[in-house]
Each structure stands twice: as C-alpha cells, then as structure tokens.
Image (cartoon, rainbow, N blue to C red):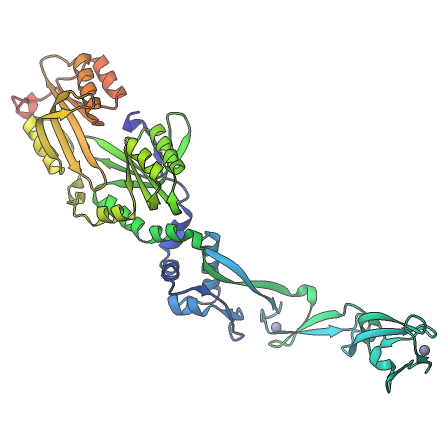
Length: 464
Ligand SMILES: [Zn+2]
Ligand SMILES: [Zn+2]
Ligand SMILES: [Zn+2]
C-alpha cells in the first residue's frame, strides 16, 4: 500500500494517562509515589475544615487542599493510577455540612431520650415487662409490679433478650429512633436526612508502575526527540488497514519532506516482566495491514527470547529501555531547523544532490547496492539519513529523455529497489512518464516527479 493511501486519524481520546499527567500537580504526586517518597495518601480528621478531613500529604506536596485535593485523588483513581481503599464513612449535617454530629437515641413511641438498655424479662404471672435491673432485689428477682418472687426461668418468667425500654412511657423496643444533633449548628436531623460520605485512602496501583514510569519520563522525551527530528506524531492513531479493519497504533510518526513522506509505526508494550510473542505478533499484524514499512516497538522492561527472534525476522526495531536511552541521548544532528519547507523542484542532478544534502541526507550518485537476491544494483541516487530510530533510505531514479519514460524503466527500477530493500522510491522523469508507467509507479507507492519545462529554468543539461 502506498504511504499516501493511508489515512491516519489522531485518536479523539488519548490514553488514560495523558490528560491527567499533563496536569503538573497530579504528575508530581505520582512521581513522588513512584520514587516511594510517598507510600500512601491517608485522610486525617480535621473538624475545622469544611470537609472535616484533610489529606496532609497532598497539601504538603502540591499545596492542593479540600475539595480540589479529593477530586484530584479521585480522578487519578478513575484513571486506574491509584487504588482506593475504604477508610471511613462520615455523616454530614444536612444544614451546615459539618461532620461533627452526635447520635441521639429516642423512644419510638414518645420520643423520650430516657431509655434503659439491657436484658428484658417478662413476669409470666402478671405480664410485667422490664429490664433486669428493675427485678433485682438483693440477689433475688422480685417483680416490681406484683412483688412476687421470680424463681425459675421458663416457669415464672422469661427472657426476651437484650432490648430497650423507655423509662417514661414503658415501651419496650429493639430499634430506637435515632436522630442526629449537629454540634456546630445545633440542628437536630432525622436519620434519613443525613448524608453519608465515604472517605478513602489512596495508594499507587503497583501493576501500573512500569507503565507510569515510562509515561512520565521516557515517553515525553521520546516525543520531543521525534519532533526534533522533524516528525509529526499522532498518538493512538487510528489507521484503516487493507483488510478494512481499523487499527489503533500507539504512535504514528510521519515526516513529510516534500520529496518523499515516510511514516513509522511505533508500538509501546509494557509488562510487569517480559513482553511476550503475542504482543509483538499483534503489533506486526497491525503495522503490516496498515501498510507501514518502518516498525519500531518500544518494550518495557524487556522482550522474551522467542519474541526477540520473531521481531528480528520481521524487521521490527526493538527498543528496550537501555536502547531507548541510547537513542534519546545520541547526538544525531537535529533536523528541525531544516524543516522549513523547501519545495522540491527538479532542475538537474547536481541541484537535486544539493537539495538532499540541505535536507540532511548523505547522497551517493550511481550507488552500488547489493540486493537480497545477491545481485548488485546500480541506483542513480541513493540518499541516506540517520534519523535516530531508523535510517531512512531513498532510491531515486532520474530518467531524462526526449520522450515520456515507459513502463519497462519504472518496472526495472521498482524491482531493483525492492530487491535492495529500499522502500522509499522516487522517479524523476523528464519530460514525463507514459500513462501506464505513471499508474504502475503510483500503485507501487513510488513518488513521481514529471518535469516538462526545464528550459524555462535556464538549465540546459539536467543529466549533470
Ligand atoms: Zn408481676
Ligand atoms: Zn416512651
Ligand atoms: Zn449543622
């Protein structure tokens, strides 16, 4: 598939982490936890505050307080970065929001607070019901109503269990009426009017450690690196494959140099231990179906043996943390400065060479290249540029003649480039290509420049 046929759409929603970690405060908190400067974030009661509790660690580390602190912690949990654990349930006064409430237990019949709680006995003869204390009389049980002595449980009296009895109206009950007195505003609220609020403590989800460590540091640097090398990057790019399936590729880095535009599919695989073959296979299938020739897979912490072999076979550039670090610190001349668009216009071979050199390419004229078949090929112009993660090669065929260039020449060139494993191909044809040659070139993903008006530029011999 030709590079230009591919449609790359940037994802509408980034990976979970992007949003939250663009927020500096969240990032600081997470990195402190990764460095175990903070182990967990626990609330502490503080009745002087509006919420009634504070997160001292959050206040000290990033100076975020109150509701803002809670919403930051909650959003980090929603993103799967933090794990929440239940800490306590707080009740709030519906009038003033204070959590400084006292329960007030009342008789469900008369509302009195004068309630006794204990083992409740019933005198079977007179049906008197009271708490045990009411029957006690110097080591014996005597009914306070009929003054009879209670001797045998089951015969004289029975126990009804631990219950409550109202001292004012005599009602015996199990569940009292509970309402709440606010110690701040003195209002009394019924139980069902009270809001319950759960509060949590937070800790880092350790299964996300490798991922977070990558996201926080190397990834940011890697993106900078790509942009320094003139790449435009679409993160979580959705790419439509040849099969019709839509793939999501972690990063698609595209460099458009006017002469050719090329893209790299970059996958990021992070595991707790080794990244397995299945992940590499999956990436390779996606990249292949989407027509990417350049494939780079960033692997944290490392790749399994079997997967390594497969990657090599499929020409997937693997970057484990060590190699990635090397790539990021290597001083490959940054080409961002030369990214000032310089429109390409063919005037002569030597002008083309200069143009390529200005773009940072090393240029070889009449380059001899050995192909996979073992044959040696001659390529008019071979331009090579080390772009840090990949070495970009362009094969350029310059055909100058009196008549349009035919299919055989373009076919020949395509065949050579394929055998030599060069994926970016340019045909410059003066005065042009035949229709079928042009169609073939397009189909093979070869970029075509047809120049019919060389005379106007004053250049007499484009072959030089
Ligand atoms: Zn009695
Ligand atoms: Zn009562
Ligand atoms: Zn209140």
